Image (cartoon, rainbow, N blue to C red; front, side):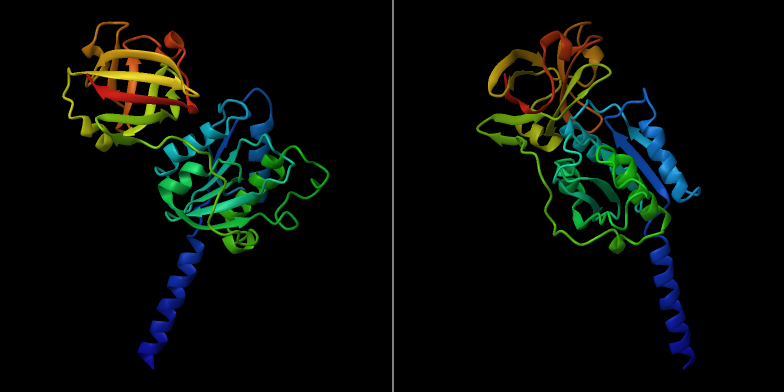
Length: 300
């Protein structure tokens, strides 16, 4: 009896511990709002109104206006570095007030993403996997007094729901009904090697410096069997139209070439990237990012 009693208490303690630690009181915000007005502060105020014990952080609020793809990329780029139980709020929502769904996705890593299901979840669903998705029940999870507001769901629905979830006011099951395990996805060119050439696309820019970051990972790139100093032939396209074509060297770092000269290198994510040493590749050659921007690479 004693063993059974303590076994039961141990199991109960484990259950209570698990529930209590499902969320960690951390909320990370991302938006295309910028910081010129009070929109971000309003979202944080709503969150703190739910619980003053929450820890609030910013991923970025400098996503270009309406750029759902970049929101998807920045989430995928960053989320994996945060602990399990973190709740992310991503609000890049050109369809606010429309029929698009407001959801919370729980990843297989135990994180929660609160966002419109408009393509924002494309990459996080691939990289971390989907454990479960629930649609936000706005009858229960919406800021009081906001029912007549249709254009600031970031404040009235997403920040409010995220705060309640992170603080443990509601469980994940209380967010709303399950919606299955599929999200709205944005199509893009996967990294692919065939007959001595690699295809890929430009998901994002290293915006501060104008470097071109691709989705071509190191393992795919190794199939070209290049060594530092070898030249490769690269062509960039926008909607299938050639924008840039050049032969340039594969280098370990920027200073391997003269100032202003182009190079290919592996970035901090170990993806193939392109730069001009101490200059801006993107503005110089009018090469930008997004699913419409593709490239091919051949060994020269």
